[in-house]
Amino acid sequence: MAKIILDQAMMEAAVYGGAVLGGGGGGWIEDGMETGRLALEVGSPVLVTADEMNDADLLATVALVGAPAAENQYVKPMHYVRALQLLEKTIGQPIKGIITNENGAGTTVNGWFQAAVTGLPVIDLPCNGRAHPTGSMGAMNLHEVEGYISHQAAVGGKDELYHEVCVSGQLQQAAGLVRKVSVETGGLVVVARNPISVGYAREHGAPGAISQAIEVGQALLGAKGEAAIEAVCRKLGGRIVTAGSVDECELTTAGGFDVGRVVISGHEMTFWNEYMTLEHKGERLGTFPDLIMTLDANTAKPIVSAEIEKGQQITVIHVPKENLLLSATMRNKQLLAAVEGAVGKQILPYLFG
Image 1 (cartoon, rainbow, N blue to C red):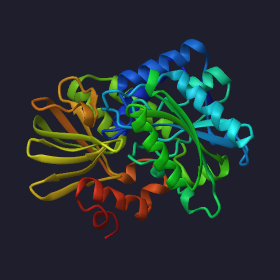
Image 2 (cartoon, one colour):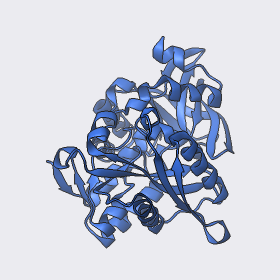
Image 3 (spheres, rainbow, N blue to C red):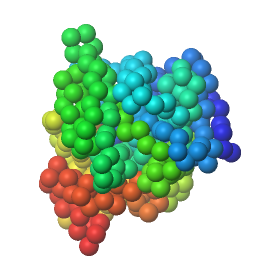
Image 4 (tube, rainbow, N blue to C red):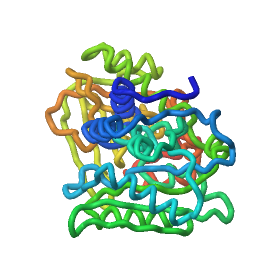
């Protein structure tokens, strides 16, 4: 179906399926549910496929930027609308549709509230079908388009930490400035950014990835416990790697990112917001952008990296990148090289030989 009126069941499935596809990042289930419920309370957001749009129509990406574990982070749904208003004012052109930067518990439903308030459609064409740490990874390789000017509006924080900022410039510099703003607001901002045509987004983004998140969520919520985790693996063509107690857990929030490592039943995972590597006894079992994800072994609730605590009973799953709907950025050696410095592990040799 090309056009779908989003409802409560779809929202819940999108949040939980997005949590799985977040791969350890992508925001919190509780925040996604709050944003989704509010969207449905104020209006009827509509999900539209790219085929329903003209190639020249402008889309705006909405996103969360920062560290979900930051103690003082504060964003509210109206911040999303404010960021979109600031972006449209900056570019002086109408936005015809809204896309999210990625799949995640909080991010799959990015844009639903704005759509409910403004009447603009949510387009089933996210910048990436899984969560990723940097803004450039959610920008569909626009940094390689000669002469492209990135326009980004960021809003977040509470009381004296509240900021709203508009940035225009070279994409990676603009993304870096927005990341710094997220730190100043207490750790997290909502962003409307990078107006781009439907035609470009279709070629470089992840068409159909919102629908995939909903289907994954339906599989997860349609069963309980281990059966639910197995259902998710079947849906995505993945596998359960291990299940057991969290033996070690290290997390540092620095520069707007959550960075650390987790050891579960002898399996070590590093993360940079999202899980980047999975190893057992020195053997590499998974490398970003493969999907590496942790779920509560008893309830099957997806657990993001920032929630992991020593002693938890966790199941680890792995889905090869070939089974995901991914952006062109997930094949960009320059962008993926940044992972190595963040987690101190080799990435490129496992992806490019």
